[in-house]
Image 1: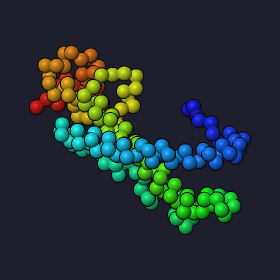
Image 2: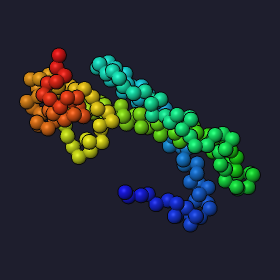
Image 3: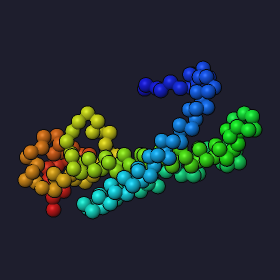
Image 4: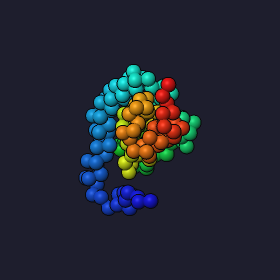
Length: 173
């Protein structure tokens, strides 16, 4: 597995870069979250309007509170001057119990919904399509119209990511 290198480089960074870099953690979330939430609402509404059912909720992507390793009382802190925000437990509780898991869940949920949309409207293979299995559906738009299946590649007709039983026309009713 290729890893991102950060831990080995952190201590070598000039202090001013670290101080300037820390707020940059929050700016992308503050600026993108409202738009992602709006997109999630629109995509979810689209999927419901075209007949989508059994779609996971956002809360399926948020880790259960009991799964967090540390309770509020046990949350570790960094021993920095008391004037530094990282010295305080509330800072780490906010980040580790709320900011990180909730924002990661939001973006994972948005990706999940877009996978469903692509599996529905575009059941055509490409090298990244196996990654879309989390958004697997019972049958694609093309599978609803058996007369259109002849236009698809045989592997696209039978792909289990967008064709539940891997058979031609299994979702036509």
